[in-house]
Amino acid sequence: MEVCVSPDLMLLQVIAILIFVAVFAIATLRKVHLGILMFPAACGVGVWLAGMSLRDVVGGFPVSIMVLLAGVTYLFGIAHANGTIDRLIEAVLARVGDRAVILPVVFFALTAAVSAMGSPLAGLVVAPIGMPLAKKYGMDPMLMALAIGSGFSAGAFAPTSLFGIVSYGTAHQANIELNPLTLFAVAVVANLVLLIAAYLIFGGFGRIGRRGASSASVAPAEAGSRAPLGRNQIATIVCLIGLVVAVIAGSLAGLDPDIGVLCFGFGAALTLIDPASGRTAVSRIDWSTVLLVGGIITFVGVLQRMGSVELLGEAARNAGVPLLAALVVCMVGALVSAFASTTGILAALVPLALPLVASGDVAGWALISALAVCSSIVDVSPFSTVGAALIATAAEEDRPRMTSLLTRWGLSLVVLGPVVLVGILVLPGSL
Image (cartoon, rainbow, N blue to C red; front, top):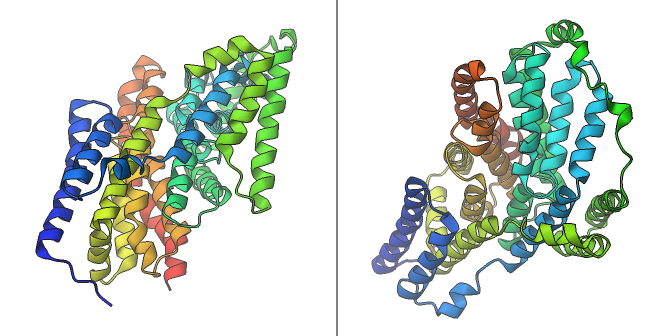
């Protein structure tokens, strides 16, 4: 049964959508915090266009996601502050030695592990180590850059990290069933495929091995002289393992564990053991992302209340090809994310994809997983923070070539990523 919408209401719905897009554009062009603009804009649209009370508008702020983000970034802020993260990286590199052929795989895993610890951008701490090592081993810097970039994207969708939290948190808020471990698995597999492609295009297994053999002298030689782990670092590692075990066990048992609360619990234990690191970690809580996600989701809640989201969904259904609509949504997410905030795109497009899921023609978990990963794998573009950091940490003479190649790689994934992921994840469920 079709719902009739009056022309006046439809005009208000369209105006609300245009304001939403305009705020995105203004924030990008003026380089100001998107969440700060989104929140008051949401209040204005909600009160003046939607006829909502201010209390109802503010009530749409995603408190549960805020707890997740704050808890995760606090716990891993302690791990950074007491040196645990640095020691873990050193231990892994010491075991690599002169086996240059596995360096990209090691840095993929290192970046993924660090990115999984709350803030994905924290994974970029390995870039100043990895890019110079690639130069010393005679490796194509593009291979190392893509290994780090793919590891960043893979780890970012862990249940304990930002992209994963935003994706499945927003999906659950929209009543879309999405297992966080399923999303993580999709991200890991997709980025491993990209790593293999990078190996084949920018070096090849044999060539790295031959080049690396002549550079064995650059392998870390001081591995045996490292000081033992301190009490605080051992306690941190125990808590991190405990968090991972609790999340996996809870998810497998169908208990839907609250990761934010778990992180605050482990963080509280660690701050009692090491108050100094606990105080430092408070400043590492990612309030910027909390405001970003909160502002966008609050505005999207107003759009849902006005029926603007249903209007977009109706337009997609009227196109008659839900699969094509899903492909377009993923391409839009990938394209915008190559130039703007991936977190913002995820928070905005996950709810806007809801009407496609509601039609029953597209599996919700498949579409959200495809959209999320498509929006992340393009982050190696030089126009994003990840791509810019990779170029900045490369040798000066390599930067022009890397800028050109990362641009091609990132923009090619704007098309290839959605086509492949929608084809593999979404298409089977729509047949």
